[in-house]
Image 1 (cartoon, rainbow, N blue to C red):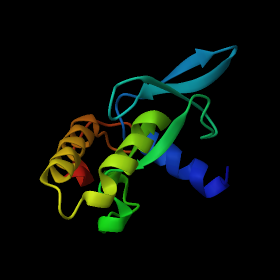
Image 2 (image 1 turned 135 degrees about the vertical axis):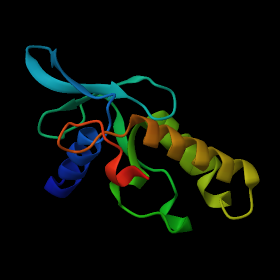
Image 3 (image 1 turned 180 degrees about the vertical axis):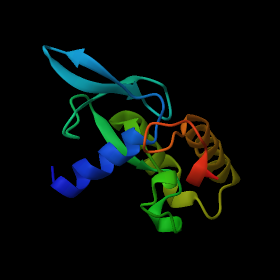
Image 4 (image 1 turned 60 degrees about the vertical axis):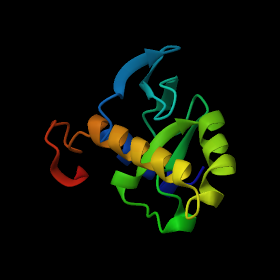
Length: 125
């Protein structure tokens, strides 16, 4: 995995209050939750996923979604792939797809923490 991708994952972790440092098999790691299903996700302190954590673009890139942290979250591979297959291609013409995206954006805002570890809502709104 590229250094840039690992940095992006660490940026997401820094702004997601579900992630906390923990010990995993004798080393420290980040433990958090999938944006979709709340399954546990493990990521090394270097940003390398230990579990099947993937970067979720909440608003799909095909619909103008960006790499801004407010539009990114970590999701298990199963959930991310499912959304990408079932909903992302239909975003513009499917109200259910847009409703799912709004729900995920709201969940991301609820989980938001300032990158310095504070809890203020700074750039999430």
